[in-house]
Every structure is written in structure tokens, then in C-alpha cells.
Image (cartoon, rainbow, N blue to C red; front, side, top):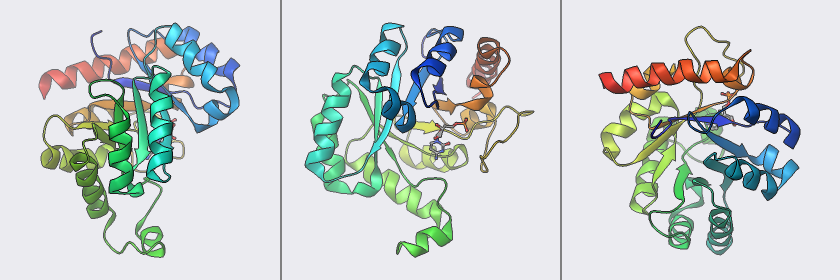
Length: 234
Ligand code: C5P
């Protein structure tokens, strides 16, 4: 597969479980996401192990700090050889530009989290943001774009509007994906893989539907087939 669209979330508290799943996956058919939990438990070594196994890694540490600190963290993360890293767009323009400037163009992809999907209108109001979440997301995506970031993480439901506004070359990474007949777990604003691709998503972050499948590789192949069909129909 040329450009696998699925990023499997390795949401584990230890290296062993992550490696068991890795042995059931194939870097031909997916990328992987290492987040705060696994990274904190297993350190940069786990990134190295997955890269050695041939997987492209999205290091999901969502940096948010003063510009100098974020720039340095981005540089060190990119030096691990990862495919994608992210920062919070709420860190603001100076922080986003510092992060961008820290990375060579065309190397590690840099995307921004707009609003956490766990934030509803009440949460926004409580931190002094009085706009609708959709408007805040759009503003933050515009900011990320104007600072030269490669894209944003957003819900598949927001992807449609963002694809329209941001053009074809802005990368949209969407979590909250569930096959039509799957459990929703703790996700609320979910979309099927087809819906996400139809809405313009480039990459789909999928965790439990794959990690808890009886046969993760079979599930991965099934989801990839659905994605390929939808890409062809788009
Ligand atoms: O298991 P599941 O498919 O729900 O995992 C989704 C992954 O995407 C998790 O790693 C979760 O932290 C991440 N994520 C999310 N919603 C966001 C941002 C990230 O579910 N808005």
C-alpha cells in the first residue's frame, strides 16, 4: 500500500502490550500513533523499536508551552525519526511559528490540535471562549494554516467544513472512527471510515476497533478496503 490512511492508536500502559499488537499488524497497511501514556511508560526507545519494525510513527504528545520550549521539543521529537508530531493550536501564533521553524520543510509533518473534542460549549465558556466550538475550530485551523503547519487533528464531522475552507493540501487527521457495527466505547461524535474519507479526512486514527479485534490484521484489511472504495468514489 502506498500511503496507508489508518493510524493505529497504541493506547497502552506498557511496551509489552504494544509489541504484541505490533506483531499482529503490518507496516504496509497502517501507521501507528504513540501518545502520552505509552511514551511516558516506555520512553523514546519504544519509538525507535516501532521505526525499526518499519512503522511510520505519529508521536502524539500535543506540545503546548512557551515558543522556545515547544520548538526545542519539536526538534528533539523529529530527530527520533517520526513521521508526524503535534502541538496545541491554543498555544498561539508565536508558539506555532517557533514549532514550524524548528522543523525542516518536507520532513516530519507538523499538525495542530484545534479544540479537544472533549470540550463542549460550557467548557469553552468557562475558559473565556464564547464562540461556538465549530467557529473556534475553524479559527484555530486558519491560525495553524497561516503559521505554515501541515494540518490539524479534528473530528471527522468537522472535516467536511475544514476541507472546504482550507483547500486540498491541508492535512486532516481524524480520530473518533468506528466501523458501522462497532461499539462506540467512550467516543461520542463518531464517524465511520467511509464518512470520514467522504468528508475529506486524509488519515484516520483508530484504536480499540483494531487493538481489541479478534484478528487485528483482518480488521485492518477490512477497514482499508472500505477506505479505498470511498477514496475511489470521492
Ligand atoms: O480507541 P479509539 O479509536 O477511541 O482511540 C482514539 C485515539 O484518538 C485515542 O488515542 C485518543 O486519545 C485519540 N483522540 C481522540 N479524540 C481526539 C483526539 C485524539 O479520540 N479529539
